[in-house]
Length: 428
Image (cartoon, rainbow, N blue to C red; front, side, top):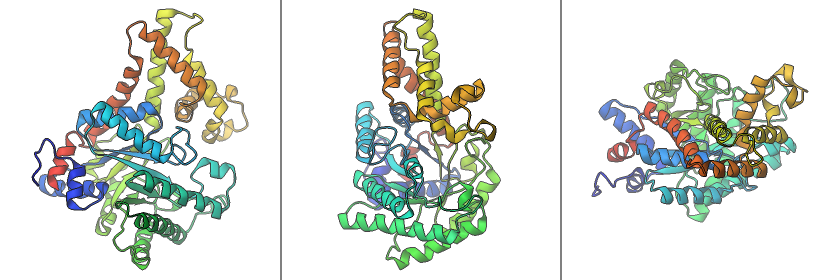
């Protein structure tokens, strides 16, 4: 292709092939598998903090791996989300950090779970269906305008249903088509580059764990997209329920392999969500998983590293007036946010935060920290911690980023992503 191997990237190869970046990546994975017998699973990091975002780019640079960022509307949206970033802010920040650290790997900004009532604010304010869909459409437009390259369209929640009632797959398909149609009309009217799509969800409320419903969704899209003049659009990823969720860490390779075989004739690959702390990540490429999302795990590492740094601070300074006390600040911020309430067990409902067992309170704090990293008191405590340790010659911020990047590197190795930037680019 006229490019030296050391300068060839997946983005260059995608441009030369006339494909969106993510579709070029998956096509390259397929070619590499046919030629070398090695499948590569793409990693999508949920950018729930600035430290996680930086760490993912450090890992992408050091591992020479492509990297996807899967941002929910709770994290990044027109209202700033809990990160404080709007879509354009997020994309610009990613580009800025890539330049700053010298990351030349292909990095793709993506929307995760774009659908009505999947944004906490919509549920809390009891948005009507019309208002919820309008909000999602506005967010899709903002994502496209900002330069997102993969949109997860996920209309699988309907808060109007009764407890135990499952949304019909026909409704999921119709709303998926409506949202893709809206996104494509805007993109084409603006003359913007093609984007890729992801559909479905791992949640049981969609019924996509059922193979009949899984096929029904794909069949409905196969008919509905051309009928809307979108015959050149097809979801590169279909999200599958592959054994992992918020409390389960065992990837079900057999189920994943079955779903991958079903999706293959349609031209799609399977994406797993809730891949945090998965016990067998090396099974993902063996099952030909197209991608995997990891997010809360990296917040836990960020939290645990800060607590370890607090111990260093205490060892150096004792309990003097100038210490950060960051552990207590984080716990209080999570408590104030009230986000922890959505993870309560039935026997914990109605209890104040302080009355919950210490072990569970610790879990709720570690998991809920992703919502409060931008809290002013948390920012001040972190700054104090970093400043105190800097006087002892400790670069605390670098330690936090490095610890997260090391864990991201663990997934890169398990997913065969190390050096994949050049390997896959050559396949194109």
